[in-house]
Structures are given as C-alpha cells and as structure tokens.
Image 1 (tube, rainbow, N blue to C red):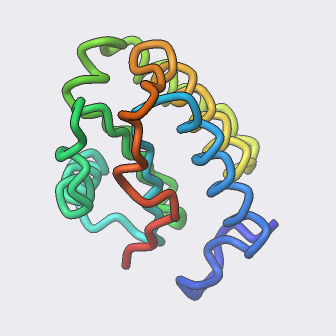
Image 2: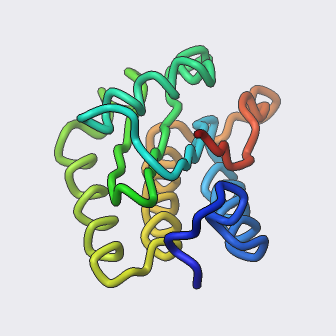
Amino acid sequence: MRIFPFKRKEIFSETEKERLVQAIRVAERLTSGEIRLFVESHCSYVNPIDRAKEAFDSLDMGKTKLRNGVLVYVAIKDRQFAILGDQGIHEKVGDDFWVKEADLMISHFQDNRIIDGIEACIEEIGASLRTYFPHEAGNDENQLPDDIVFGR
C-alpha cells in the first residue's frame, strides 16, 4: 500500500479509491445522511478542524435537508485528520461519538492502516446515521456525490 506518495493523484491507488467510495455508498444506504471524504497531502492550517470546516462549506455540506452531513478530512503527509458533523447529526450523537471515531482512526493510522481506518470510521458514521436518520421511502435522494474529493 502506498501511503505517502509524492504526487496528488497517487495518494490512493484505484483499488483503494474504489474501496473507500464503496464504503461511503454502503454507509449511506438506508439513511438520509451524507458522508464526504476529503483528502489532501498537506493541511494548510495549524488545526485540521479549521481546514475541515473550510472544505465542509466549500462542498455545501451544510445544505442537506436534515443537516446530517459528515465530512471525514485527512491530510496524508501531515498525518492529520478531522471529522466534522453538521448540526443535525451532532445533536444526536454528541461529542463522545466524534472522540470515539477519532480514536478509531488513530488506532488504525498508528499501524499505517490508513485505508482501513478511514473505512472503519465511515462504517461507524453510517451506522449512526442509519440509527438517527433512517431511510424514508420517497424522500431519500442522494444529496451529495459519493466520490472522494482531493484537495491541494
């Protein structure tokens, strides 16, 4: 697995990209919630949560009907990440959930299992979204793309 490549296009292999996009699709199945993955080599901010907020806004994630979008932000070379949930999901899961998800990613990242960590986090976010924002027949369109967004 290539974890710290030099070119942006090589951050993840095609197989890894497909695996993560599939994880997003499966996680969003049976929920009205939305998950986005934003990946870049370096974080241009001291605190990655500030960059995550900027990405969250630029991707219009705050415009979901139920305010239940979640952004997973990862700066690969800097070994930084942030998980940002919109108001609707945050009110349901609270701070402890995000801390638990961060710990999950850290445990995988420490073992250089970056893809596994992102995938596990996406799966758990999806489970929470299904619990608090279950699929509603006739009212559950995919509001945001399921692709991976690559930053700078």
